[in-house]
Image (cartoon, rainbow over all chains, first blue to last red; front, side):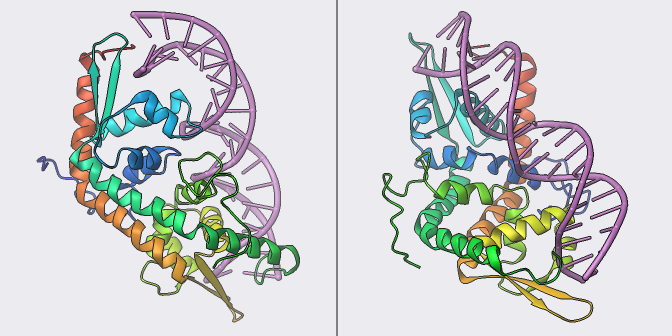
Length: 138
Length: 138
DNA sequence: CAGTATCCTCCAAGATACTG
DNA sequence: CAGTATCTTGGAGGATACTG
């Protein structure tokens, strides 16, 4: 959606620039639960609040609500309320949200694939850190 | 690298599970500066400390050091010290690091592409929030 | 079921000063 | 140049209790 007002006044859209609004998107994604929510909804199907809650092992109600609200605010998902008893609320990614969702799913898949190598590297690093001192500084 | 010890004892590698080590990878990526560092190094070329510092507008020395150290620990980049005067230290992604780097670059590119739509959605949301009350709760 | 309301803790991140 | 050391603080995130 191309609104008229110009985001580029201050020097262009560049995530490396301090005040670029894209930084706020990165900070949203960097939320502790944001990536998992996006991946959980990535296939485009609507999911109910407590179903999400169960899927995201360890999340609290507060954080799930807050994360969903932030994603809704940025237009990445929609919230549909069905005024039944008991209430039913479904969350579903927008086309925009499915775009990032797909990318984020790539990240989580990568993590699962390479976790062995990472854990091993971590162990090696901590091992070396124990004896070998660092060159330059410290 | 396939080490012998089994990460799957506790129930499988699944980022949705509370104690899955992949969660620590997500938390690394979720650091405020991690994605930008990865993207800045994504092409595989070695970059010096202060060059990175200048590129990542707004980062402090402490955070750059901390972020680089964490990435080094996880085997995503290497640190090469050339004992010249003045000292020269170069950071460069490993093959592993270039893997995520590429994925993360997709995220930042996506952010830059869709920032207009996101900013617009955000404005609409805040507009509505001002008058219209929410159904269910509050 | 799908939230809201409070209280509380802790640490990521910033600011500043110093150094081999 | 490439760091380390120290102090400080906002707010993310957790725990718990309550509700339409």
